[in-house]
Length: 257
Image (tube, rainbow, N blue to C red):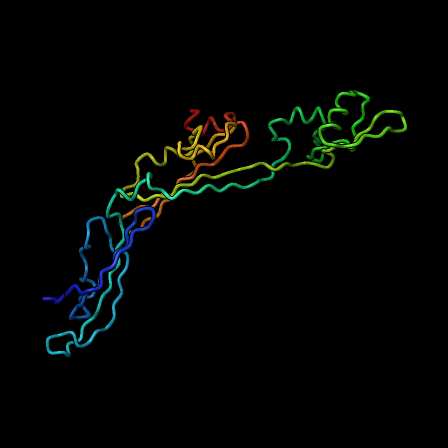
């Protein structure tokens, strides 16, 4: 019969999302039994994740028996009160992205105000180098006042203003990803059906990160296993101004189906 003795040296730690890592040390009299030590986890909810061993002499009654110290590591959720989405690690990543002016929500107004046009041959936006009051004195005066620019009088006697959008093709738009990472004992059965759904706002405690003109789309989930726990990364992608385009996403988005 194999001689397996649990030795002093247990340790454990629980991280911020409720996953506990537990290690135990065992003495085995025969190297052939290294895999039997700690076969049963010390606490419910744990699953073995690794084991390693080291030769150990002098632990037998005769002081000369050879054996092995086996260290077994387990992970899992020991106390569900420390895990779950309520105890998620939360992150908000915001950054600027560059978009074509054609996607700007006020593009039609910009096009009229600043003499913009789309060149089909080059596939680029074009703006005149200057604006004159030939067609609209009010427009030139308004732009001059709003942007602190100075107009001049050209050879034809028209007031002329440098076009603020001359040479511009793109604009910066703010984007954000709201991320929750949490641990569960079982993967929720409806997790895939949520992908692509849209929510109008973040959970109440994160309302300060919301913008009234935008909403959030559920991204594909990332799932990894840590012993007896499944770690889920849940991301919501912030929409452009005006919300996610129903005309584009109605066919693939459960909210619009």
